[in-house]
Image 1 (tube, rainbow, N blue to C red):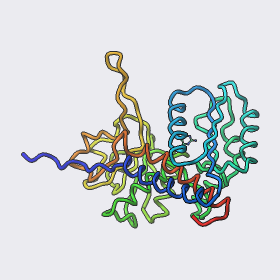
Image 2: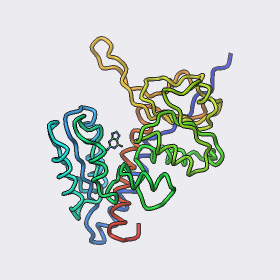
Image 3: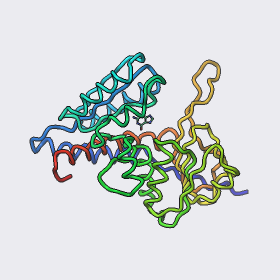
Image 4: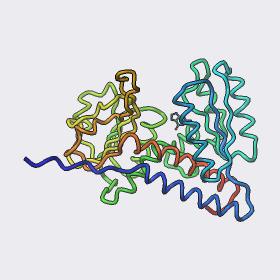
Length: 298
Ligand code: GUN
């Protein structure tokens, strides 16, 4: 019996290293020319442990690329009005090119009011309705959310993959990943389906996909029956399995890697796939904002 062809790993960690090196080199050129460094402001409200880890990593990598990162940590009791005041200050601060308000916010805060209050030209997360509209309408000059932008970059690096005319299925309809991912793929002339938890025959829908993007947040839900032979699979999920013998469970994606072995052509691993790309694209978006705001060549 022959063993199944192993799935080729799409190495997001290595791709993120390349993007960060590009950002770092560009920042070095600007500062060598006597300009200020790009500024990224991070805002973290409350004590969600995962959000603290994410923001810490974002700040660390920003610093490594030569960006100035200013951090604002607010207690979970912060009101919408207090957070809006912080956003307003950052909007007015000339040294701040990018503003990142880490989501989710505590339940009592009006998230929409906060996102709408961001200066769209500093909205490096691409969550402001102006930027959402630009992406949906295919207009340049906005910002695209970092996770789907990172996924697209990984797909663009797949030399054998022809996105034009390909069937793409995005599982998950969040504003952060699913919807913007679908818009990006549509912009690349894919035939796009957005599937979700209420989709009938989800496996059958996914099996049509040349490109499958899984962003559901359900551990290892995508198995062999969901994969078209030869498909490219992008796994956005980060799920922690239940602890065993008091030890924390391991991190897994939405895709059951063992099950897709021999069916999919290539897939992003978890960890080391999409995750590192999200931060790299945040740094790239901040550099883009800086270049636009200063009116200089990239
Ligand atoms: N929470 C989960 N992903 C993101 C992201 O890309 N940006 C922000 N601000 N919050 C998030």
